Image (cartoon, rainbow, N blue to C red; front, side, top):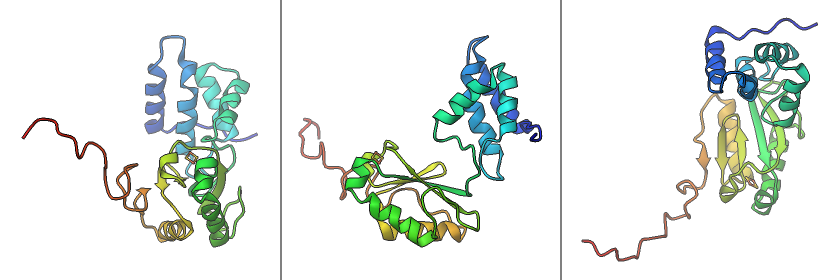
Length: 197
Ligand code: FES
């Protein structure tokens, strides 16, 4: 039997705020928010423990299985421990066409882990995922809450080394472009005559 899970005061306040967003009697709608908060509170493994599922089920007056249905559906909820940095490498078609195989291979060979594994130092877990909605900046990897985009094998290795050294490498596009704008800057509306000065 695992130990009982309690939200810390800070996380409990956030959980209550999430529950208060829904009409009276509909607090179960906050289940995903509470799962996310429980995962963030657990800095030892960054996952939702069985005890946390029990506590959330009690707080929301839900059957435990219904909490588990949500927890197992959404891939952002971890039910097993993961490393300090969770590398979610997208390999869906747009990323694949733009070189995600090279990126995925570079992560595996640089860290010495296969997909689904965690490095011995507990720093990195690699997970292959489906489209993360950043196809315009393919190929990309999500690391914890941040997107690293326009990658190749060399760039992702540099990012991994920076994280290992305790640095915070800049997130977003890694090829110099602004967001999803073309390389070289925005190209639209530059030649149009709007009739002004
Ligand atoms: S295919 Fe990789 S973000 Fe969409």
